[in-house]
Length: 291
Image (cartoon, rainbow, N blue to C red; front, side, top):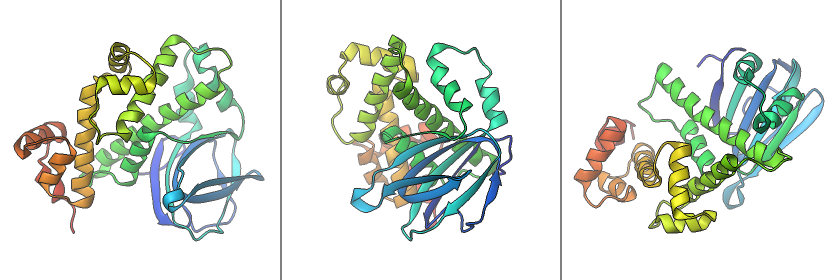
């Protein structure tokens, strides 16, 4: 997709030593930058301020989310001194796009965001949960059938989801006064969602999920639907189907194996649910990528 000073950019790099071979100084316009370093390291200097992002490799890999506000036209220089492969998702929101987003009433829950976007080179980092990691992998490996503007919309949708999740994490860290009850319940629902995503292979019951986040089953069921617009078990079913879709598209597993991953005992039931969710049969998705 075309990247301009007015549009949101979402992209990724994989298995390269750096996101660009150019190490000279370049000018960048004001923007909000969000990087998910899945593996490897990234070093750069903006206006003489050095930044080093390190996620590691192999079994010691620890993905990192890094948020950076570039509030003015600046100079950027990448530093390349590592041969380790870099896997990274990059989201960039230019200042005009961000200004339109922030043109709302300044309420207390969003004050940390306004403060962050007011400071040049303000930055924040954290270890991502399973939901952000899953969204990042969708950006690195989008569905092969999506092309053109439809593919761009898909990437932007994942990028926007990551942005609000990351801003939520920053607000939880930066807020000086106790968060409102609705904010606390949202954080609990986030923990529930991350637990589900990290344990899709388990027999997930509402009692088990609730005990993991320290809330009652009825509260988790009610708040999860309020915040995410879907019930807990509809979300579990959707994510298991997504696991099966990714296995079909990226690993070309047999349809029977995909059905098992999605928690279905019968291939016919799996195929019906899959087509309803994606508009394609499992076999079409499996055959959409050339071996």
